[in-house]
Length: 290
Image 1 (tube, rainbow, N blue to C red):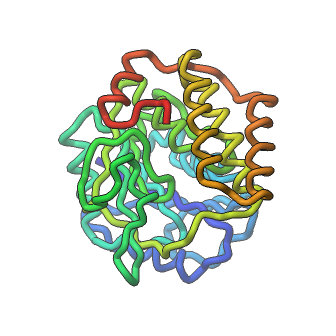
Image 2 (cartoon, rainbow, N blue to C red):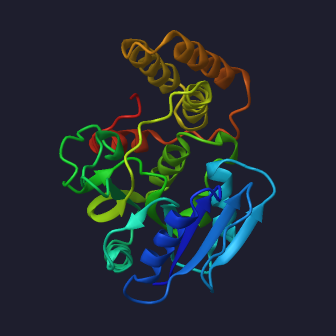
């Protein structure tokens, strides 16, 4: 099973990027081809053999990763599995790629694996980095309904079947959009606590653009993927949750602006999931109303 890797960078963390590439090069098993995409910035010097793409402008995270996918041929078809890794992360173990190969070979319906993210100094995994509602035990592996964008492995047949990440999202919720489409096509998603990407702990951004993107893309996500009766339920729940978290007045203003923008602008093609997928999400512990 041939494995490739896509790394998206703004070119501002050359030392961390080099350390990540070294950790990929040390993976056991067959050599992993790597594509580094410079998202609107020139790339620093990189090891020999690393493929590179320099984009003239910042096209956002999903579009940048889609460029990396296509660098492996249409839909990433030159390889069987693609790793997506944050440029300031580090693979903790040298057998992570082998574990991925074994998992995908053993389970033919497994489409996506979400790695565990741990702080390199403390070993702590933040609750928000466990992609399920019951997130108190990050060491428990399980089936899940979404995945972490900068620490995952995807079977390229998923892209062939359901397409890539939604370019227009730019940032936030693009992973869930792909996850829902994959689940609707019959693929499964696993969270694996033994596949670890070491990554410094950062709080989510609190500037206005962050809140606007999160709210706008939440609306787009629902409009694109949910059966019509669930759209107002899902968005109503998230509206109330946002108010309950008592954001600052500037943050709430930006969030409300993004929420309005999500309704006023095109969300892209609408392909509502089947009701049996709604039931599958519910059985997996996260019904698509939250």
